[in-house]
Length: 145
Image (cartoon, rainbow, N blue to C red; front, side, top):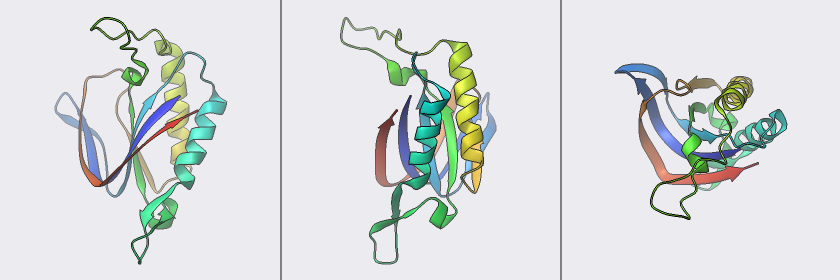
């Protein structure tokens, strides 16, 4: 399981021109599910995202977690995180989980976030989504379990 995490001031995702989810200050999480991933992988990453201290305190040091600031999360499914571009000029996605497993683990991860963050919003699994965000920092991390 892979996550690209961006610290944001605000973000939203639209599907067919309609807002599917939006947040204020917090994280946009682009979540990719790989073939060998399990609920344990999702739990490990949800705990890691929740405990990260990457928000500035009063002195400007990155000492605060999302929980400390009532941070929100927007979770977007993104199988392209498993793209393999080593050969040719067209990516291969053979390492990405199949749709059934990916959708189940994506939904489980969203459920885990709902119990950890002030607000959890999400895109629509498998849809063509348009994500808008105001990156804060910018501060972007990659996580893997």
